[in-house]
Image: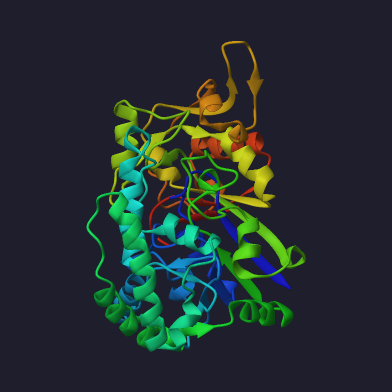
Length: 427
């Protein structure tokens, strides 16, 4: 049995889709295990840029079966749009290639309305959600009142359930002074989605279990990153699902004995979207340069990402929480042309305390007391986009990669040197 788990090792947007796309060449089943269409994975292949929000990145590989697992919350409108967009590009994404777990929960338009209303009501304490309805849908799931995808097998009954839940949500929206969602209109639209998507429904746990029992490789694709995890991230500035490696087990329904490898994905610098602490954030010209060269704008929202130096304190935390076997470092090419590079190797406080591990469990107020301790490295001017081996990298870039390995204590298995699928350095 072989399950490979791919996780984000920072605040999301690390380039997991590109890593999954590469690893999917050897996978039988590629399964998404958490999050919703608040996540966006961009894959560049054969001159085409695909931005996927729900469909696993492995869909580009003809021999790979793809699954949207039970741990995912699904906006059916977005899923239908993605399936149609893939078909227009000549990528098969019918029920023979793509499966939807019957246990996944469904996002309604009233979930999205609640998401925006709740965040706006927080005022200065707003979390900065994507307003895609993710949090309210997970909240309904935990409260045991949510809609599961399996109910789409009976479109008429599903429509009735949609109308009833929208009416319940409208009572909450009224308290926020927000315009209600029309229950009948939502029910009619969702009935149509149910008719379209019911052929995709499957028992996700059985699909994963059968593949593992047959000795096939299951590639588990996560959304967001470690520091957005509901338990282990920078709470409350987090998402509503388990973004760590353990989330693959619960989101897909298999045991830890099947896991053969956990790969963390990190940028060669650090970014995050929305509010919350960010120890190495750059608010100067270098931060602006990284944002523009790296095209650091959200795949889902288009929001500019906050940019900063690489933080190996975070990566050590990622290695410990996820049990990383390897690390994929993306966007090394974005750092080309910078004369000096800084990397946070520890944190310290005014009282002289020092830590080399991220103090996430003590909350954002405690985190604000720590400041990064930097080590400087020389930059490089050379264009590294053509490198395919470490030996092809200029000495300074090679030294940067090797120092990251030393600081984190995890081998680098892949290094991205450009946006293209083939622009990868393998160790």
